[in-house]
Length: 307
Image (tube, one colour):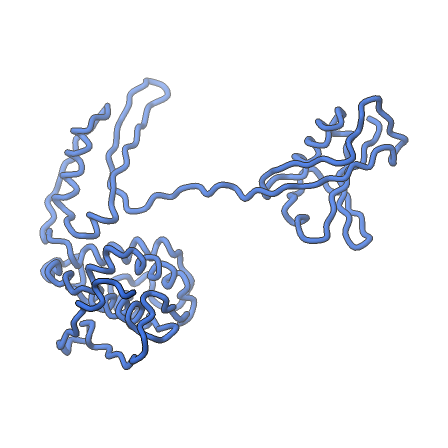
């Protein structure tokens, strides 16, 4: 089923190089509706990742492919590109959503972006989030209805209130108004308190990206216990045959040693942790990471020794 804006998208007859119609399409098969990929034209995977993510933000994609974005273009805004970046991005979206090729090249878009963001010139590797932030800002400035941004002296707040939050957001809108702001921006509230005098400051700041921690990757480790095989170890405490433990893949071997020690009621210094692979035994140090030893065919063994 095709998106509702597909049937409403009309060809622009302008001959401007940066209009969507300049790059003609010869596709005649069934459109792929967003399943078209982007070719890597030389360390551009960072850019391709950002563009594909933005392409699947369907509200902005619908606005652009419907042609309704044209009424927002502000050619008088010197902070923007006069619509050049917007138009070449629309052409790319047309190929991603309405073309029939399994992939397309973002070279045209890259060449235009480089005019306004020289740090991305050439074919060096860059950070995808940095590109995303820059590109979103270019799209915003192309549609920003504020041509002359006023100087604003921001007040100092010592406590939080919804009224202050609204006031600071209104200040932001005095300088920035576009669909990008409506869809991609929010506001953070930060409290900063002096540890000596206790004085507090409250900051209200606009944001388009929030960096969030990913939950650590977990794993379950099975450790076979080999009691009584080193230094004549013996104990009145029942020794289990094995120890199961769940931990982060980034944990050190000291974590596994401590888990075995607790299960056997012995000191960590009495546990010797060993891996067995392909008839080879390797003693693990406490400071080593367990991650390299989680591959297929590796067994964890623990020997208990006298203190």
